[in-house]
Length: 297
Image 1 (tube, rainbow, N blue to C red):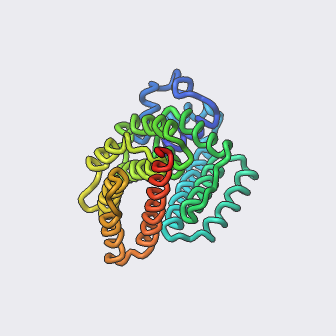
Image 2 (cartoon, helix red, strand yellow):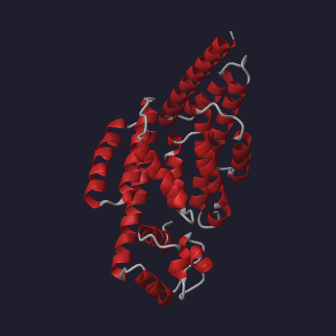
Image 3 (cartoon, rainbow, N blue to C red):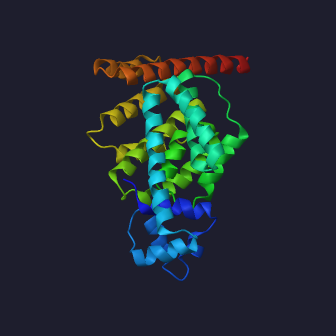
């Protein structure tokens, strides 16, 4: 799943070098970009001078490659803990990740720290208001990335609730602009892009913003695989939630029927997660309806 190109890109960006500057005199800009997103490989005869431009040895590059792969595993572990509602272990991660960031200065530790805090807030349904520093840390990293690979998609997917409608639209446009570049890399990437769209939809519900939702439903419908039962459930769940929100008189019975399917399938962790989510959505609609009635009087 992990490509040398993605590690090279992260190191290049840490050195504040552009694709054009790095590739000059060695290979084409397009060739380097293709290597960085994992579409193509390059020979050692090209890799050595590219690393020299970054003032890195091959031994250092391999070290960072192994480190970056371990960071990817941290994100996967955080996602697993979130699905299990394991707040205690997530809190342990936040302390450790913040300490690692202060010791090393590596921005990826701070990214993971922010992700862990957001996941805890979602489980607790708590108003863990992000600091401007946390929000800008993620936003500026994503905006300055010339190419998006698996890391950028994972980062955006797990921090979507930091952003308002305008920021979400900007970053999602950038993300989907890179869709065709990364869609052929691995099956994993296609899977991640589908769940990125689901996370965007969930955030749009938070913001009570339904204008662009159909576009994401359409994208998911094109990407979803017949044997992906979880994605099929989410698509039905969010479409029923859309009908529930957009029709004032409609109740949440259909939404609950889809959540109850998880109970029937004996997936208790996901059942608890989405039962909690739906209860929160019911309260959200109730408060929004009450506010609308108050402001029209």
